[in-house]
Image 1 (tube, rainbow, N blue to C red):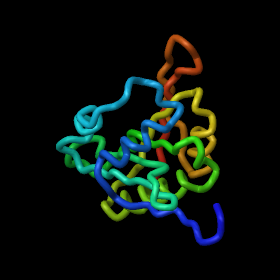
Image 2: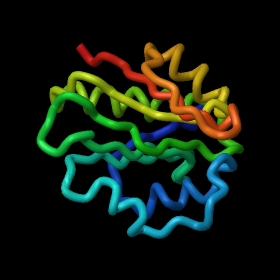
Image 3: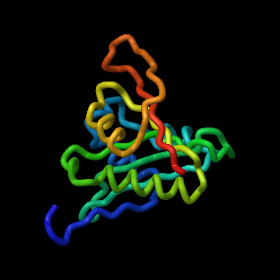
Amino acid sequence: MNEGEEILVKETIIEEAIRVHKNVPEFTEAKPVKEYFENRYRNHESLIIVAYYNGNPVGYVIGYEEIKGSKQNFYCWMAGVAHDYRRMGVLTQLMNYQIDWAKKKEYRNLIIKTRNNCREMLSFLVKKGFYFTKVEEQEKIQDNRIYLVKKLD
C-alpha cells in the first residue's frame, strides 16, 4: 500500500461480496448466484462486510447466527480476499470488524470452518486466537474440513 491509500471496511449488500468472491482463486465452483448466498443466511441475523481499497471491493466476509435466535455462536461462513490484495491487512481488518460486531451483538463465540489445504487461512486463524475444535475427514486429506472457534468474552 502506498501512503494515503487505505482499506475501508463497511457493511454492504450481497452483490458487493459476490464481486469479490469471483476473484478469489480458492473458490473454483461455478459462478455463484445471489440466491445461493441468501439461502444460507435468510431468516438469521447476518453480517455482510466488504473491504475496499481505493474504492474497489477487494475482500469480504459473510456471517450469520448459527442457530436462529441464539447468541451462542456467530458463524463466519464465507471469507475471501482477491489474490492481488493479499498480505495488505485486508483479512485482518475484515475479521476485526466481524469480531467487534459480534461482541456488540453479545455473541459468545465466533466459529469458522475451512479446509486443510487453505494453509494461509489456517495460519491466520491460529494467530487471530482461534482454536481447533474438530476435523471432518474427507477422501483426500487436503480436503478435510477444519472447525475452529474464538471465544468472544
